[in-house]
Structures are given as structure tokens and as C-alpha cells.
Image (tube, rainbow, N blue to C red; front, side, top):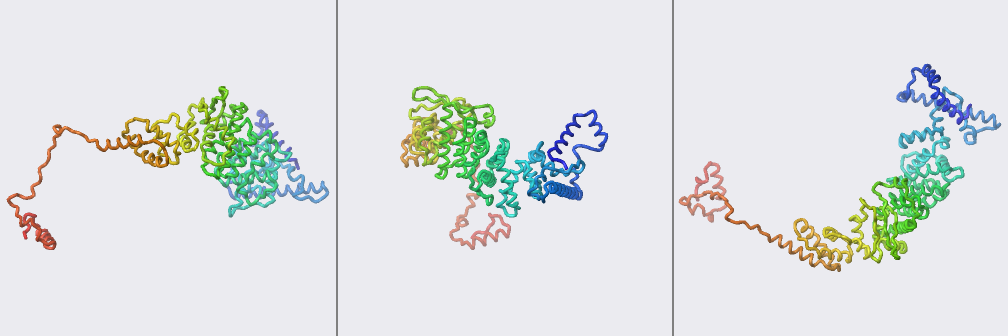
Length: 575
């Protein structure tokens, strides 16, 4: 028998030693194994040989287990089983020629061969082999890499509600749960084990599949809360509130916040989303506040108007208030590493704010955070956080009219057309005045054709249209005609102005309809053909062309007879 750890270290030492001794050992190996080639040829294509190989492998594993238990029974002086054996996973046969590599290699952690295989082939290809390994040997759960256990645990949780899928015993599920729980919450947990487990689960929390996100959230809740039942799966699990229980939380919270903020950008469950935002508001720090603000801004862009999402807006506006205050106090870090994590279209901008004491304050923000704040302030929601909303309103839409200037925003459209339209639909006059800045007549024509405008914003748009004197021709006239229908509708809803615009549209339309092309008749030369001669004047017999006294039956019989005889019309008989 041999100790597994020392056994594999001896193999690695032998490999390194052989590789370095190129003058002696490598030559000796080449001389002894002349028919060897690397990589070795696959023998699994032969089904009979493959089955025999597996059978021999399992037989060798069973014989080794019996030998180890026999040795331990003799040493301990009592019967030893698989559950209470201390040496079963620490020893192996000292058989250099006939080792069963399928199991021994999977238990090797340095280097972690199984983890490398999973990363190179992908979890979907490696998962069937891992499942077979666990089904045949439950003790493998204690030796598999954390990444494999996470993938296997998520697979069983996600497939538990599907018909026809094999769910492992509760004993195996609890064993996997305990292994992962020890990796993130127990005193034996390390920074590496905590990050490896949380990063793997966080990837699935930010998945596009709803079922995948639910399985990941339920799995994380199982690891953090002892009272959570393994099955059935809780589709409304909210694990973020328990993330502070993980080991080394104070050191890793900036990374955890970054991972969780990515889930905010895709999550659609409002309760889980509120749970994430509450955690981020409390624990996001200066190292990742810009990054978190970016992902929250992506979430804000997806929100639809409606009372059910008010709690999300309240949490988001509270986060933005904190973001603004920390930026104002220069407590938020901007590093090259952070810049590399942000998308290329996200820019660092400088916001210049004039304070009441006439001093200018320069704030460093990201462009998406600016857009997110403006979107929230323009949203239609009733249960607003008045304090946080007032702070941000005073920043972007001050009553003094001295709005902040955004610098270094080249290539970044802070007020796109859709956001301006959202601003025009708000009931706050300060927001509407900002949306009206530098608005052109063509833009006013497009905006006035929108629904849900307030009477105040529509009045401002009509004032722009009334003051314009550009001739209405061509496409501009067609656009104005379409806009005139909306103008009349908004005037019925107490919008003021628009009379001059409507008069101009009416005049331009009338002028367009009355325009005639005048041509000098002397310049026109047209040659017309003469009328065809049907009858000669002398041959006209009034009796023949008077059909008053001819019945329909007589007329039809006359035509039929003429056709049968083949006569020309001039030869048809008269009546």
C-alpha cells in the first residue's frame, strides 16, 4: 500500500526528473519504448475492449478497497465499514504498472486534472462523466473539485422539477450541500474556495434563462441558510440578504458586489431584484461603486412604468443618491482595472456643478450612471423617496436654472431622443424645460406626434412651431399635416398655442392644391388622327338604325343568322 498524496508526488517527481535528464534517462526511455507515441492512441473505439477495460478497472478498485479495509481492521482491532474508514481515501495500491487512472486522476488536486478537463471541454460535456463517477462512488463528492460539485449540485437542483430526470438520494444532495457550505462559511474555508464557489454561482445568477437563475438563487440560499429545504426548489429565493455570512466577507465584499450587480442587469423577479439592490446599497464600496452604478443603470433602462416596480425605483434612487454623495466627496476610486471592466461605450465624464456659494465642483461619474439618474427622475411613479429624489433633482434640474455641465462626453449621447420624449411626458416643469433646450422645429414636429404629452410640454412645443416661418413644402408639409391632427387633439386637452401653425398648414395645403401648370399654347404642336368613318353619309338609312321597334329576341336572332352566314355587317338584312 502507498499514501495517495506521496504516490502521485512520486510520479510527478519521476516525470520532472526524467524530463530534465535528457542526456541519459530520456535516451534510455526512447530505446526501451520505441513504439510509443504521444498522445497515445485511443482504444475506446473498440466497444468490447472498452467494456473489458471498465470491468477490470472496477474490479481493481474493489480489490483495493477490500485490501485497505482489511489492513485498517487489523490495525484498529475492530470491523471497519465504508462510512467510518479513515484510510479508505488516503491509501492506494503500490502498483506502478496496473493503476486504475480514472479514479486516481480525478482525486489528484495538484495539478487539478479534473478541473482542467472541465474548463477545457465545458461543463456540458464533462457533466455526464462526473455524474457517472458520483453514482458509482459517492465518496467522490469529497474529492471532486469545487467547480465540479457546483455544476453537479446546480444540475440536480434545476432538473429536480422535470419529469423523467434521475434525482440522487437526499444523502448525496446533503453531502454536496455540506461540501459547498464548508467551502464558503466554515472556519476551514479559504479566500480561494469562497471566491471559486460564489463566482460560479454568480454566473448562473446572471444567466438569461429564468429557470437557471431560479436554480442558482435556490442553491445559494441552501448554502447560506440552514433552514432552507433542498427540495422542492423555491423559485422566489432571495439569497443576497445572507451573503454577509460567508467567510472573509469584509475582504471580498467588493468582489461580491460586482458579481451581484451583474445579476441586476438581467433579473426580472422584482423581489429578488429588490434583495440585490438592498445588499448593494449597504455593502458597495469605493472600489466598485462605478461598476455597480453601470449595471444598475442597465437595470433601470429595462424598467417599465407601473406601480409594481416602485420598490425597485426607490432602491435605485437611494443608491444613486449615495453614489452622488460619495463622488462629491471624492471617495470613489477610478482605476485602469475598473476602466478595463467597463464596456467601451461607457465613458468617464466630468460633471461641473455650480454651488450656492458660486464655487464650481467637478464630479467624476460614468456616462451610464448619468443616464440612469435622468431616467429614474423622469419615470412615472408615485411612492417616491422624497429626500433622495430632491437631492438628485437639485443636481440635474436646479430651480436656479444653472444646470450642471457634462464634460468629456464626446461620442456619448446623454439625452437620446427616447429619453427626451420621456422627459416631455413628466409633470415636472423643470425637467420639461431641460428637454426643450435647443430643440429644432423638425424635432418639435416629431415630438408633438407622440401620445401622453402633458399640456405644459405640448404648449412649449406649439410655441416653437408657431414661431417658425420656414415654408411648408414637400416632406415638411406632409410631416406638418400629420402633426396638425395631434395639435388639434392636444388643444382639446387645454394645450395653448398652435393657431399660427395650423393656419400655415391650411394655407400651404390650399396653395398646393390650387397650383396649375401654365403653358403657352403656341408652343404646343399636337397632331390628332381623324375620326374613323363608320357610315357613308349617303348610305345612311334611318330605318336601319332606329332600334326602337326591334325587340331583343329579334336582334339576337339577326346577329346569330348573320354570323352563321358569314356576312359582313354591311350585308346584314334590315328589319
